Amino acid sequence: MNPPIQEAYDALLEKWGAQHWWPAESRLEMMLGAILTQNTAWTNVEKALENLKSNQAISLPALTECTRQQLAEWIRPAGYFNQKAAYIKMMVDRIKTAFDLSLDHLFKLETSDLRNELLSWKGIGPETADSILLYAGGRPVFVVDAYTRRFLTRHEWIDERVRYDEIARLFTSNLPLNTQLFNEYHALIVQLGKTFCKTRSRCEACPLRAFLPS
DNA sequence: CACCAGGCAAGTA
DNA sequence: TACTTGCATGGT
Image (cartoon, rainbow, N blue to C red; front, side):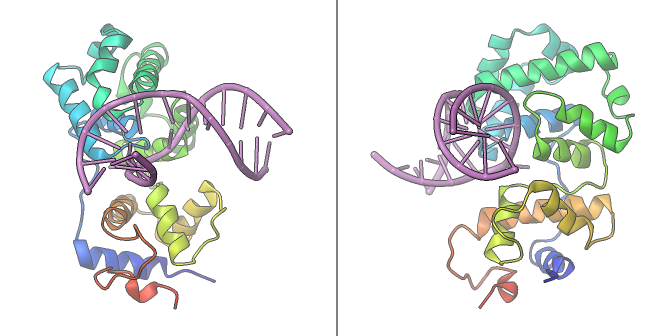
């Protein structure tokens, strides 16, 4: 079947309006948040980012100079702090050696080259890479996360074992290739996931209830 | 108490 | 390729 991708977006936007993501003041903060929020509640990420801000640590030079142990302490509330501190350190090292410690240089890469570059960094998988491409790079790339997969399977628009890239293609092939549209759609899916779709029960207030299977 | 949250890497078969 | 496990905090 051909899922009502555009109609679902219209219903979500009607319900909640524009979300204006990503909640970050800079590309670097966005990238840090993308790593910190992996399998982690955003409220915990906010605490970690506050720690970094109060220590003036959201800058490439500061992240280069601090120790991995110090960084791990700052981001402790976000969980997996040893792994994530190592990932952030490796990211900054790579930006230093290959891009002169400049995000401007990094983001000059063409989209598919930039995606491959990000995916080559340990700790950056498809969702994190695509989040950075969309929300820090402004590229028309669709982000697929656990909420996206859940709402699609609940509505029986995909089988449970469909791969990441195929889910992304479901959106990119049924919508205009527009960065702002993909930005809002992903943000609205997260809003949906945080609010509904937590149980299998039908909810009267769900903006997508009209699309649920009978 | 158990379960979950805006994943990913590494190991095994 | 398909599955399993470790990583860790804070809220419900």
